[in-house]
Image (cartoon, rainbow, N blue to C red; front, side, top):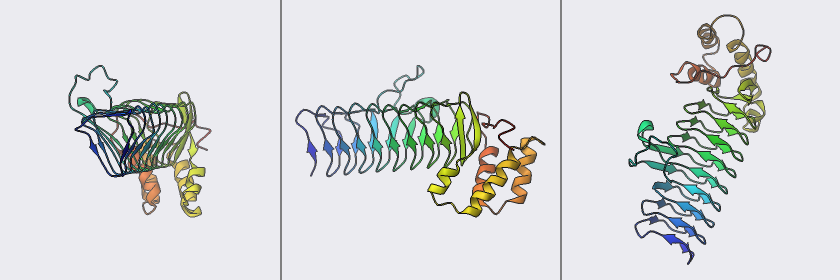
Amino acid sequence: MTDIHATAIVADAAEIGENVSIGPYCIVGGDVKLADGVELLSHVVVDGDTSIGANTRIFPFASIGLQPQDLKYDGEASRLEIGCNNVIREHVTMNPGTDGGGLLTTVGNNCLFMVGAHVAHDCHVGDHVILVNNATLGGHVNIDEWAIIGGLSAIHQFVRIGRHAMIGGMSGIENDVIPYGSVIGNRARLQGLNVVGLKRRNFDRETIHALRNAYRLMFAPEGTMAERMDDVAEMMSEIEPVMEIVDFIRAESSRSICQPNLEDAA
């Protein structure tokens, strides 16, 4: 049974699923779609062409789907798509896309956005991602699944964050972060692999050992990056996580790869 509080303002055209709860003083716009089991606790604003997947919970004072914070935005129709089973805490902001980024911002499933986190226009956030308090994504950022963005960190526009990467708190990220990498600092430097995260997600000892060996080879001081990628690909072509890093580094990107200090790669 859907429950809409008497003080909530819900546009007649909004699509509201089964067992949705819309708490006191929430505002839901006419182009909004709330799937079954969505819960807006109180004082939540959801507007624009925004869809929210089943069983997502949104806490007070979140602002979801309002106009992008981009001076180039000129009122063009754009969308925000949020998946299922997400937790979106107080004061989180998420913006739809712009013409310069495909007119679409997406958030996957089973994510946690802690207090004050921001997902800017044209970002694409994968499944099981965590943005800790006040983490900020600039426009056009791609965050792959299982990544964790530490509190008070800021991700520069167009940066890619690979799967299972860990961004330490208060970091400024201006370059792409490899899958399984761990970075920290302002500006952030690659500190190694996110071994704690890998163990928590039950990666076996052999895979972690192979990743460590590959990491040392990839970021050794000898040769060029391209030469080192070729060597690693030849030696470890059968190890999927290693090849995922190789493919990530080789992929076209407008940002360079976040690198370690030479002594960190030893």
